[in-house]
Length: 48
Image (cartoon, rainbow, N blue to C red; front, side, top):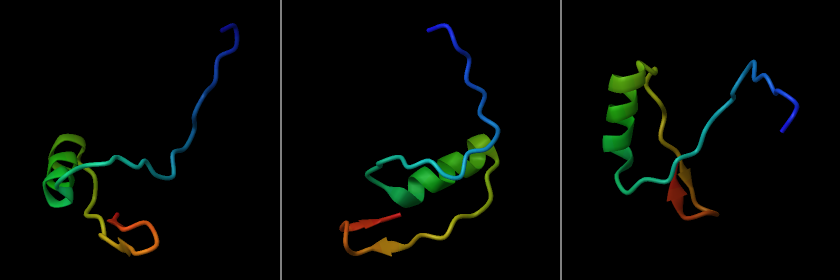
């Protein structure tokens, strides 16, 4: 790789987890992120 890519903004990141509540608590504690709203994505059969 000879080119460098610079990222200025990330809109969102998806991470598959078994326990979304525990994952949210972990990310909030470790990365000091704000509270997130959990939504049901019925077409995909997941909460996100």
